[in-house]
Length: 309
Image (cartoon, rainbow, N blue to C red; front, side, top):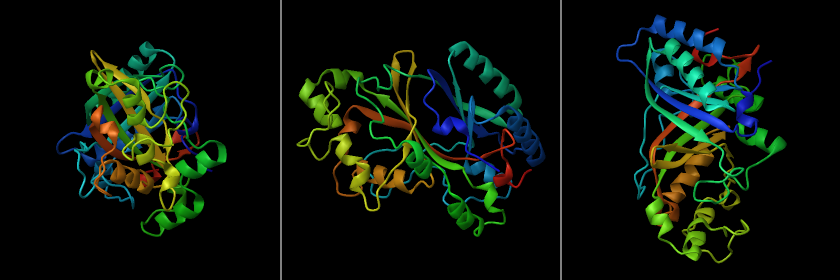
């Protein structure tokens, strides 16, 4: 029986690397199948979580209802930096050197069909804080709620199956994931007084308590998951990143569909009511992509969703 890639539900690792890859021009279909089969032997869903982007499905003549390249929000008042990518790899571990070596092994296999778009160093900061110092993922679902939020149920998989030529098992325990790399403007953030910082986030830095009278544009108010109908819960697995003097957050949101994330982003971007999330005053997305994280079967990431065994 298939199960979820365990890294999706597990606690964040101390260190991580995120790889975005695109297909080479005029990629050979048979070569792509061979490369993906090699990747399958390396990906157990724990130390290496993988997600397939729309271009892979297109080349292999498959489809996945609900999967798009990335967020396109009509009437958005801010740029969302849509980035088409074919493959996402989340390398998870305890040591940066080990992750670098794993990346080398991966890219040596993938190089025949893929080019690396970006390789991002990420890490846990102060037991789960963003680099601004605020806690990240305070109201993340846990336990059974996390499973219900992040993973495609057998019933949902059956619905997907009826829209394709594949069996429900190709989708059961899989997950859609939204990945956004945010670049922080620390100069703007550091110029704020503490009250302004707290009102930007919607929580007090001192005790992480939500501020009832924070502005309507406060990030917490814009993204309050219970404030949508239906409620818009996602499972966040975000981590800070740094490259030289530049740094920010890799926002990662898993869901049994992309609907909840898109509803939150619609409100954040001002497309819903003209009110832009204050987070955009101190940070901006520089890459936004969607992927499908298939389930694991017999200890390896399943390729059934791509029509491969």
